[in-house]
Length: 254
Image (cartoon, rainbow, N blue to C red; front, top):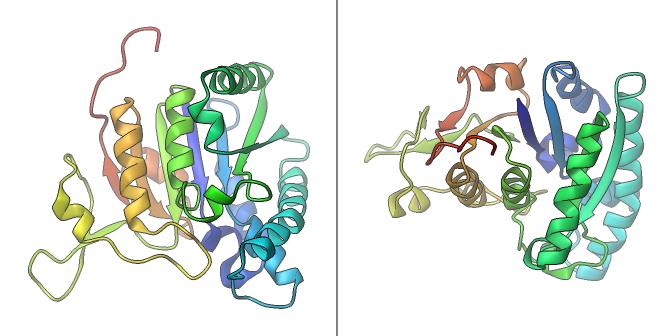
């Protein structure tokens, strides 16, 4: 199978500080022999911010760009260490232009396909250093970026890892209830969404939009808690989180 796994800022850098042990726990769950993986990682700004002596995300765009420049280096160094002896990794920094330009999109698809053919594991992040649109929320903390990638490489699964168990609904009651499966996207679902986290720029609303995009392209999607032990294999068995079935079946050859 081909999997796109998005790791949120709250997982990579809880409290605004890079947590290699948490990332290692996720890397160790990947079945590198039987599956192809593309990781979409947030956390560059959070990692860079901690270097500046504060745990709060900077409010000025130029400071966010500086934090991303520092943090991206630290982030990739961590991934290279964690995959050492297991997989060669490659870094891809993308912006919305890479998906809106037909030429750039075609080149992106060809590059990822070649990396996977060579048994290299692509690690993707949005290009926060130069792309102001992304800093202002165009990709929703990489949620929608991961969905676009899932469509570009015709992934079988998109797993969105965050710091909550999945999608919650109140259904008229005061206490929210975890929804284990969502078959249809409705305006009522959007109305139930919570806010953004302190370190991320997404929130449940962007994850719902990502799930809609990916399932429309034929992928299975799960939103799950990245701190849960064995979350990745359990998500593939639909044992944790909120599951979204594909909205269409893939044709042969897709």
